[in-house]
Length: 443
Image (cartoon, rainbow, N blue to C red):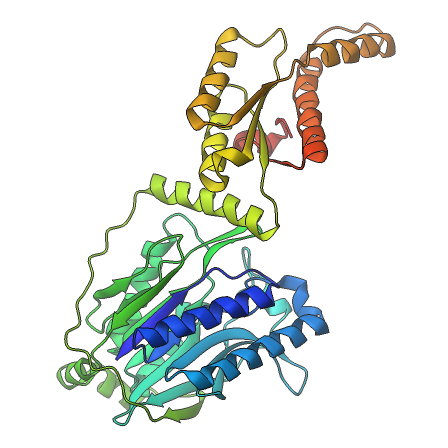
């Protein structure tokens, strides 16, 4: 059986662009002989739409996009698994997964466990589902179960699917990037596969959306706990993975855990089953991949670059202005911005006073030359002197202290925002977290 995991980068609310992207990946999956083309969570509308989910026009456009995609599948011989928000006839909103084949929506699964912590606020919008969905595909049916993101972090549903004897568990996700999260996720998803004795196909979003960054890294793991295929981090990709479901039967004959579990465990959820009769890709050999994790520094660099690039692209911005001081914070931001947006779209501005050294200027200038970005020098001494003369008149017993030192940072911020308004640049902050925490920063 051949799987195609569509690790795509949708934009929240861009139904035209998202639909075009989904149709393109369906065609690519069909061309490569995929039996299933699997898309991430809420891929039609993008993740996370927040209060857009409360707008009728947003849900109407979601439904129209879904219908267009369903119609498109009439031309392909592959099962499509897709995520979207679903408004029920009773007026409840669900985080839904649809199974589509030959122009028909065969069945839907609704997310059971709704996260309401950290960056997540799904309980505010969605109602929990209460059933499992099993797809039987092929003449000698392969049984496929489905979960959505948070569902797989809870062992109960994966266990119920194991008791139903599935061969493959499909998990669609919008799982944001955190340092060290992927390794934890891979470990427990692998544990689900080895405990349930089935393959797991885990497909994740990729790209930046507002304050979130998704790292992708979709993967397929075997019942033996081996990584069959792993997608690239922070890049769009159609990951093709071949699996041998006959190996699932062999493993179950050898391993009695699931059979013995049926003595004391029961499937408590309602189960809905849909069937597709089609020929399946005949896998000659399943080749397991070698997972080589990137360094933490490489991960962070890619995450920051993707976050900047997609924020600008999805907001229709192109150019960034950065205050360069010659120090490490602004230098790092300049490197990230140049990598994300291209050197032709970056402006570095050096804004000295008498307190700045010649070395700071030389460092800032050399950085700009090395990166190939535009470099301007704007003296803020005249502005600073004017402020000082005004404050000396306003405050009795005035003397120069920290308050006056901080005026320099505020003047630089005003100049950067003036350039932003005047020339169409977006200001990138160069403050570090310590400065941001106490409010001691240029902007």
